[in-house]
Image 1: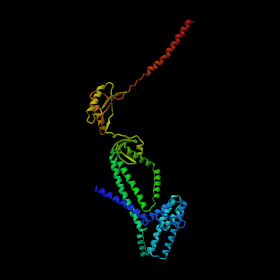
Image 2: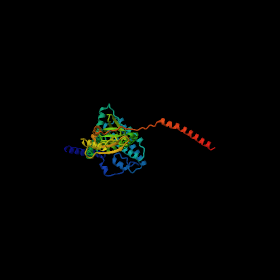
Image 3: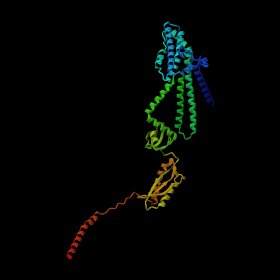
Amino acid sequence: MLERRLMSKLFVLLVVFAAACGLYGDNHNTHKEERELKIETVGDFKTTKPDISIANLKSLLKPLRKAQIEKEAEGWMNILQNNIKQISTSEIADAPPEELSKLHEQRTNIIDRLSTVLQELKQKGGEAEEYEKYISAVSKANVDVSDVNGTSKMLMSWLKSPNGGIRWGIRIGSFIAVLIAFYILAAFLGGIVRRAAQMNKKASELLRNFFVNMVKKIVVVIGWVVALSTLGLNVAPLIAGIGAVGFIVGFALQGTLNNFAAGIMILLHRPYDIGDVVNTAGVSGVVESMSLNTTTIKSFDNQIVVVPNGSIWGDVITNVTGSDIRRVDMVFGISYDSDISKAQEILLSLVKSHSLVLDTPEPNIQVHELADSSVNLICRPWVKTGDYWTVYWNLMRTVKEEFDKAGISIPFPQTDVHLYSELKKNKNESSRPNAQMQGKRENSTDMDEEQ
């Protein structure tokens, strides 16, 4: 309990610190201008006052059209160009490091505001590539490593500058604080999801772990995006790039995504779990392990078969051990001369006396079929699922032994074949012409007598 309270307090402090740092970084030395919004005009431009706050600059740029923002960008470009000229002149004249540091600080302020204008310009359909290349070219620091004294003074001046070292210190502190806060938040939300999943007794452990890890990863990714934004990076292109890459990867891995979706469906509906005996996708065996893409099944001859979840979800799934009890279906054939009632009594006695056969549901023993060679009796006792084959094999043996003792025969398949003599047939056929000739002779004799 104490540990939870400490973690909660630490989380709150980190969030407050991150928020305070962000506010300080954005509004440092500008709170007076935040109170009253004024449109500053330099020549024909509305926003090109070097010390205007970024918040005010965004507000002024919002109603402007693309052509107007292009004019503002050109104005800020002129200011930046003049600043670069001053820096170059000071460097040529070996100006004191303090003066150069001040000019570099001004350059940083100008670039920040020009970048804000360019961002608004791109959002309204303008082209900013030329400006950005110029900014990239002139923002590189030129340091003379041979002048140790001058370099150290410039570095110390930059570290003490509100728009230099102090600003980057605040940004880095905010970056770290935001990351720590989101990692703590991810662990906290993951614990909540795990406890909620454990309340559902039907949910598998794999499904619980999947949701917990998914929540943690989503929170951490959001945390990284927010943390990078505190460094002054524009995360919109990053998010768009991630979306584009995700679309390409998803298109290339359609089969894998199909298995992934099928794995989620299997986890949600739970047609089987680890340790169950299943028949699916042409494979029979015990489920050894499951993932979001595949299911590993150990066959009855000890072979390891890895089946894609898409093949399983698209096929009929038979969970042999899905129920606690099963019915053992057996058929015994007796000869037509055997006593049916006596055979039924023997079967019922053997089933009732078997220790693994359940009393309820009651076993079913009936005359099932009058087959070609035998009278078939069905014997269907109920057993626990784990005792299925033990009962099946035991009854098969004991029934044969008891039938032999009682004189009840189990006939082999028999077929009666009737053969007709070809000799008799040939004799009958050979006698028919003689009879016909005799008849003709008698007819001819009668005709002669009449004449």
